[in-house]
Structure formats: structure tokens, C-alpha cells
Image 1 (cartoon, rainbow, N blue to C red):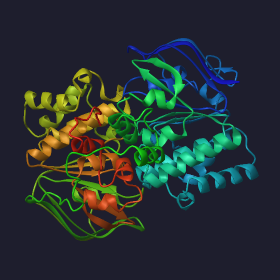
Image 2 (cartoon, rainbow, N blue to C red; image 1 turned 60 degrees about the horizontal axis):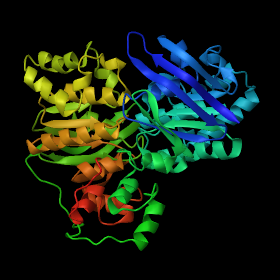
Image 3 (cartoon, one colour; image 1 turned 90 degrees about the horizontal axis):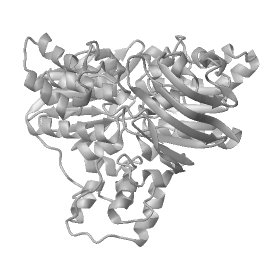
Image 4 (tube, rainbow, N blue to C red; image 1 turned 135 degrees about the horizontal axis):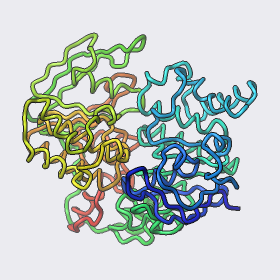
Amino acid sequence: MTAITFADVSYGYPDGPLALQQIDLAVDAGEILLVVGSSGSGKSTLLRAVNGIVPHSTGGRFAGDVTVVERSTREHLPRALADVVGFVHQDPEAHFVVDRVEADVAFVLENIGFSQVSMRRRVEEVLDALGIAHLRDRNPATLSGGERQRCAIAGALASAPSVLVLDEPTSQLDPQGAESVLAAVTRLNADLGTTVLIAEHRLERAAPIADRAVLVTDGRVSLGPSETGSVLATYPGAPSVTRLGRLLGWDPPPLTVRDARRRYATHRPSLNAPIPDLADAPASGDLAISATGISVRLGARVAVHGVDLDLHQGEVTALLGRNGSGKTTLLRALAGLTKVDKGTVTTHATIGYVPQDPNTLLFSPTVREEVRETLTLLGRSDNALVDRWIDVLGLHDLSDRHPRSLSGGERQRVAIAAVAVGGAAVLLLDEPTRGMDAESRHALERAISAHVKEGGSVVLATHDIELAARCANRVVVMGDGEVVANGSARDVLSGSLFAPQVLRVMPPFLTVEEVANALNTPSRNTP
């Protein structure tokens, strides 16, 4: 039985080019379909067509038909599909309509006529399944980005829909939170036969649970429905273990750490270079920022407690920790944007801060003007510098577009360029790879490397362990507002239960690129 059918679907946003072109796609009932593709390829538009947001809420030009559980989205508005389709936006902030988490999760159930008894039971079940029962009385506006994301997913899961559509559902989640979400999705699929469409860039999380995958390129499903492994075998954004398998000639390349460990046990490569030293020390340039015993209270909650942290020039620091551990609050305190209740922050360099939500920085009519506006506010004019940051972050083809018309990952790059162009020596980046595809992450990594080589310093608050492994020479781990680990990236990550994939297969190597260097073989895999 088919749950979702796209029949010759094309769509263009108002005054924009076609975002979907002649899509023919059938999704079987009870299937988990993984949708992959670069930023701006049309993935989010494809997903929004499933519950009728496209075209009923967006306007634009629509051709063809989408049928969901025997209902045509041409004839049914999104509210008429709410009982069969659960949808989670790329931006969790767009979901909340009530100022209390528990009431917000129940909102959809109220609107589709659940009884009070059934509603209470469903809300309890989904809060427990996603590990957010302790957030039930919080205002969503006071939560971290990852906590908001889990609450938004809870709202979609609560009605136990026939079809669940998830757009970047783990982009802001810590490893534990991502596992909880995907485990809950897998249980819904196994126990209730829920059909799932999931778009993700962090494929090491989503690929293992998918039955099939499709690749979206320039608004077209360029590779028809196929096994997940065959789609990802040559995809640049494939999981690290898949890229490792490609490097080592494993056919087919693995999708999971478990499969990769089995292959490595019987097919160990011959290394021609020294194994990395576990005691690699972080770079140590001049002091850029010094925090001494700082504590920050947000309302009744102590978000940061007694933190001592020195940041040096020429250093990339990855700030890790579960959702709500205090990472964002610490970054804002270092940037002078949040009041420190105790302790001191001493700065020896200029600071630029990019928040989790890029929309808070984007107000100009074009990407180029957005980046130029920073220099205007600083009383400077340097078109060459504007061009440089646009090129460094791969935004040249988007420079005349309105920033808010871009995909989430593209908006993230614009926000980073708009801050970095100001020339701050220290860049504090909060979840910088949120919504970014592999090419965009690679561009960001090049920009970070160039900034550090010029004597700058970068702090990445991130849940992207693979990014930390590739970029950082220091890792700081936070827990309940305190620093629980601080040291070289290889040392701290080697002691983690959530280490990067390559480290779990071939310790002490952190990345595919390190293995390629040890083989004296150029890596064929871009990050």
C-alpha cells in the first residue's frame, strides 16, 4: 500500500525559480524514507508539499498532485491533514503557539478533538519518550535550541500520525537527544506502522534507521528510490564510516560503526605514517579571553556556575555538552551579551558572536548588502573584503538573493559572513553547522582554518562531533553549567562515549583525512 504519492509535481515560490521539477515519487506505508541533498536542493520544499504547506501557505506556482493517505493536498488544507500528517519544521521556533511546553505539545491534540483523558495520556507518553518531562512547565522561549527542537518533535509525535515528516530533526540535538528522538521515531514506525520522511545532513544519525533514500538535486529526484547504502555510496555528505569504507576499498561501504568495525577486523590497512599521538597539545598563542570563576543566573536557574576558561589566539575550541548544559549562555557571557553575576571576563581582543538562529541577524534585502552592512555600521567601506567573505563561505551564487529566502544552512553561512567581515579576532559560533550540507561545512572549515592561520581564535558551540574532530585542537565539555573536561581534542574525544565515528573504528585516528595521510593516500572524500 502506498502512503504518499507525488505525481508529476513541480513548484516555484512566488517570483522565484522552480524549486521542484517533475517529481514522481511513491512512499510505501510503514516505510522510513531518507531524503538527502545539498542546501537549497529542494528537500524542505518536497517535505512541505506532503502536508500542503506548499502551496497553500506559501503561494507560488504548483503543478501535479500529492496524495497522502488517499487525500489530495490540492483539495485539503494543512489543517485538514493534521490528523494524518505530523510535521516538524527545520526551525523549531516556528512551532510554538503556547507559552508552556506541556500545553504546546497538547495543542494539536486539542484541535483534532482528543478527549481530555486521551490527551493527558498521549502527552505523558511523548514527554517520557523524548526525555523532556522535566521541561513540561517551562516557557519554550527560555529553552536551549536543542530543547526547543525536542519539544517541537514531541508535538508532532503526540497525535501518532499515519505520516511523520521531519526536516532536520536532530540538527541542534546532543548525541543523547538525537538517539532519543530517532529511537522514538523507530518505535512509532515499528509498533504503529508510521510512514516517516526524514531530511538530514548529519547522516551518521539517520542513515542506519532508513529503509530507502532519495537524492534531491536542483529540485529533481535525480536518483530514484533506492537502498540507502547505494545512494550514500558516492554522496559527499555520507557518514564518516561510509567515507572511510570508500577510502579503504570496502564494497559496499558501511553505514554504521558496527559494520565498519567488522570490516576493519578482517581488512586492516597497512599504514605508512606514524599513528597520531594521543597527547597532542592545543595551540597556545597570546591570551584572547580569560574567564575566571564566572556564574550566570537566568531567572531562578543557574545556567553557568564557577567556570574558569582561557582562550588563546591561533586556537579552535569546540564547546560540547548536552542540550541545556550552558554552552550558549557561556558564549554570550564571553561576548559580553549576558550579565555575569559572579567572576570576571577579561577580553584582550575584539569579539564577534553568531547566534544559533541566523534570522536574528538578517535584515537586508540581499546577501551582499547584509555582509556589507556590518562594515557600514563600523564606519568602513571595503568591497574587496565583502567579496572575500562571500567567496570564502561559498555564497557567490546567492549574493543577490534575499537572505530570508534561503535554506537554513545557507542563512547560517550568510550570518557567519556578516559577522566575520567585521574583522573580530575571536569568533564565537553557536551551532554553526545547523542545516549545513557537506559542501557548506567544508567551506566553513576552510574559513575557520584561514582565520586561525591569521592569528584569530574560534570557539564552536556544537553537537557536531565530526566537526569538532576535524576542526578543533581543544575540546571543552560542559555539564549542568560547569566545565567537566578541558584538553586536547584527541585526549577528550578519546575518552568520550560519543566519540567521532572513525575514532570508534580505528583509534586513535579522529578523521578520514588522518587515515588518508597515514596511508600516504590523498583523501577522496570532502568533509
